[in-house]
Length: 83
Image 1 (cartoon, rainbow, N blue to C red):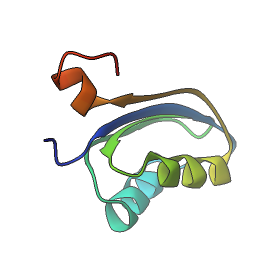
Image 2 (image 1 turned 30 degrees about the vertical axis):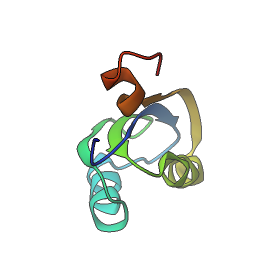
Image 3 (image 1 turned 90 degrees about the vertical axis):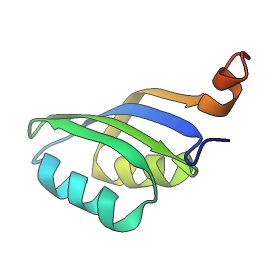
Image 4 (image 1 turned 90 degrees about the horizontal axis):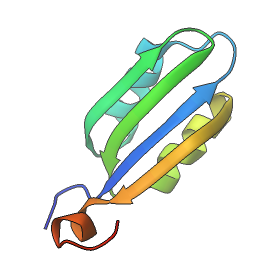
């Protein structure tokens, strides 16, 4: 079984977004790996493996509008099932 089950991806649209601050918040508050937080002050792309994707969504929604949300169950994928 994978240590972190859910591949969580989304976009955050807002104003004054800071990819470094978002990255730091993730590493300090969420258990997970494979973090990618890139973009500019208006749009940030998030990619993160975690067991609690709902916490990621809640935090990101507090920063701006979130969309293009994809949460895939990598454990199911590893077993050849649809994620």
